[in-house]
Length: 234
Image 1 (tube, rainbow, N blue to C red):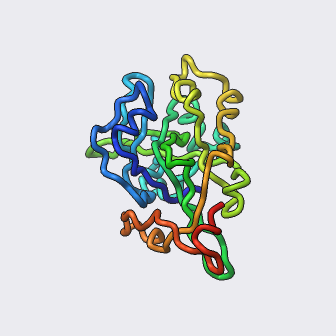
Image 2: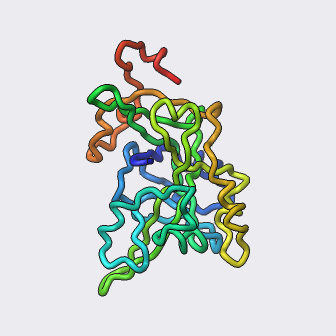
């Protein structure tokens, strides 16, 4: 699964990584984004404008928005089958912008957090789905979920799942509206593990265990038990 991620890239670098998209001019760096918080997504191709959506999908038909707590991730293999994801997969796909994510490695009775990112800290887009939930009164809630796939060999040393990170060449296909979309099978082929050779991972402080800690220290390397900081890099 993917339960925490980051978006710390400065606005000029983010704009360079996502040309043609309208992004915030001065996004606040986030070092420990947690479920239930707002995340930066590009939800469609109408104006290619990024927006803030709640992380944790609340389907349009849900009776209670609390269901979003259980729908922070969607398995790529079953998107077309699950009632919560079937229609969003057909009609409401999105990019969820990030530059790294956390996974926890079991070590006896404890778990050690690892930070996983593209080499050189390049930002990327995770494949996502979104939906709109309308309460009886008040504003509509726009929410999203991160699609996960099998872990690549690097991430598998920590966890068996990872976010489905899209190739930049596939962004427009993934966002295309239903009338122009590819078949479900073709879309599924986009949701493969990101190449391990283009990523790196290292252990980080347990500060990240609490969503209250949104600090640069959350992504600083720490020594793994019995190893130096340098030798613990994957």
